[in-house]
Structures are given as C-alpha cells and as structure tokens.
Length: 218
Image 1 (cartoon, rainbow, N blue to C red):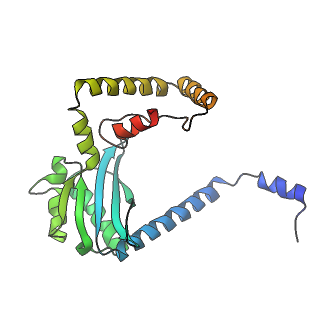
Image 2 (cartoon, rainbow, N blue to C red; image 1 turned 45 degrees about the vertical axis):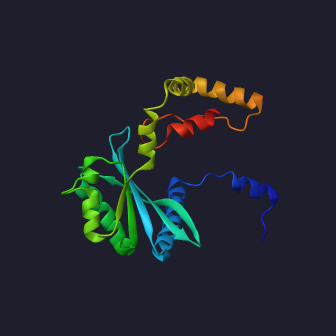
Image 3 (cartoon, one colour; image 1 turned 180 degrees about the vertical axis):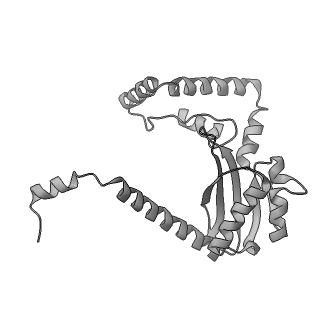
C-alpha cells in the first residue's frame, strides 16, 4: 500500500534517533574497513605508514595508513585507527599494529615497507617500532615519512620564497582566526564565483602540509 504524497513528505522530515544514526555509521565504517582489509590481504605486498599524535583533548591517537596493489594499480587508504590509552612507546604502537594484524589475519610476510615520522621511539635500534617489526618481517624496509621530509625541506627555502610563504600563512591564519572572518571570506568567494570557498590551516609537520595550504590559496 502506497502512502499519500502528503504523508510521505511528513515522514521524510522526521529525524532519526541518535542510536539509529550511530548504528548506520558504524555499519558503513565496518563495511569500508572490511573492503580495505580484503584488498590488503589479496595484494602480493603492502606497506604501512604510522602516525601517532595527540589531539587538543590530550588523547593520543594512532593512525595507520596502507598502500597496496589492487587490480594492477597502487592504492592508498587508511587501514585502522585506535587510541593509545596510556603511554605512547614503540612497544605500545607495535602491540596495537600486531593486534590488528592478528585480528584481521593479515600476514607479516607481505609487509615490505614501513613509513614513520623518524622519532626515536619509532627508529630506535634496540627497542624501536621498526626493530620490532623487523622481528616479524626481517626483509621490511623503513623510510622516513614524506610529509615530514617536505616540512623539513621547507625550512631551507630561499629567502624570497620563504617570505611569500610566510605571507600566505599569515593570510590563512587571519581568515581562520575567527568565525566571522571565515564567513566573510566565503561570501567574497561566492561573489567572485571562485572554485573553492574555504581555506585549510597550515601546520608545520602533521596532517596538512604547507603545499596543500598554498594550493587552496592559489
């Protein structure tokens, strides 16, 4: 039996309860994770990149990205995320990664590369994360994270380029400093019919590189 059009529109305006929305988001997240894990397991080799950082609420978060081969092309996606409840040592990071691998039945033998931020807990020769990974996968190659390499390279820019970069950073920080400035900037972009209407924050080392920030300005 079909509902009258008036009743249908009334039903579409009813908000779903928080529990239902959360359940649907959890189901979608679990489905995406399952797809990524299956792609990694079917890939002949794969690499991981680990990034541990502390957010504004002082919660330590571990993000692990993966790069793998899928249908004759190289793809990159987030593998998993977890909170480190106590300390953030190399042993804690390794236990989190190892537990996920064991839970999802991912083979260490296919891991051929590990990217880290170059911090001592990651690269320590005796008890670093990479050292512990090599106990599971002796042939693995460790590499310094490209985002951090770019950030370090930006510190040695010629004075003329550095001057322009600093100006752009000040402009972005001024616009993002307050909600009013952000709204005024968005209205200006709409009036000018620009392709983008928002700017990204500049950060020195993590999450967003200076290159991404400049791309939104240009």
